[in-house]
Length: 110
Image (tube, rainbow, N blue to C red; front, side):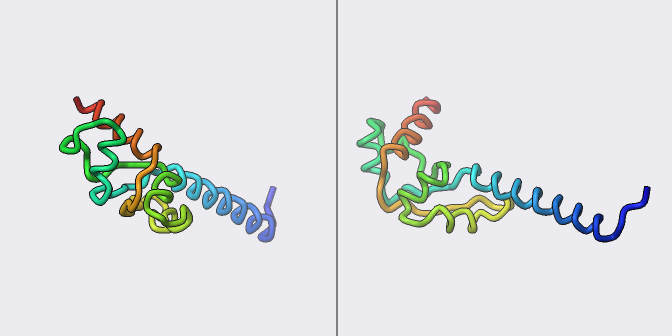
């Protein structure tokens, strides 16, 4: 059975679309590197941990990073690309979600 050029083109377009959608899903799930040095004291106090034990950069879900860095999630996803380099931002405020992430990381490293 021989496929027509038009059918081959449609099949290739469909596979390309599936590939692009799968790449977007992966980048949305990828963690964002959040620099928390500007809010480390507040994060430590709220999380109930020693500030000297708090890492200055933590991995956070994109929605948490967008909230504490005051940028849109879309901007972070564009910055991160298709997984070639992690997205990153600098926190300007803290949130309960960020404090939980820091608390879990500090307790895991004890």
